[in-house]
Image (cartoon, rainbow, N blue to C red):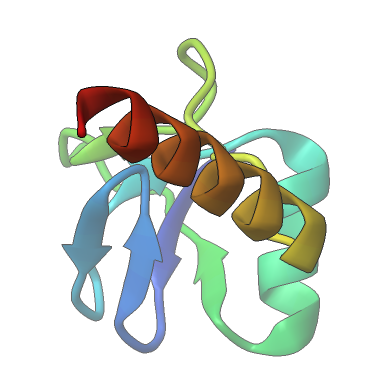
Length: 81
């Protein structure tokens, strides 16, 4: 689904300003429309970001994932010392 943001959005590792075309899947597109963040784009402009290619959506950051990452770094630091 080709979309354009109605306000700045951080998608696929880039900040898109208002009117910058991007491509996303149907469900994500409907969510963005419902929240008022974006609208469908019918123009021929080339999309700056294509979220349908590969794993464009990063995993959610949770307290558990942060704690696990911190624990790994602390263990690595102890081994280095």
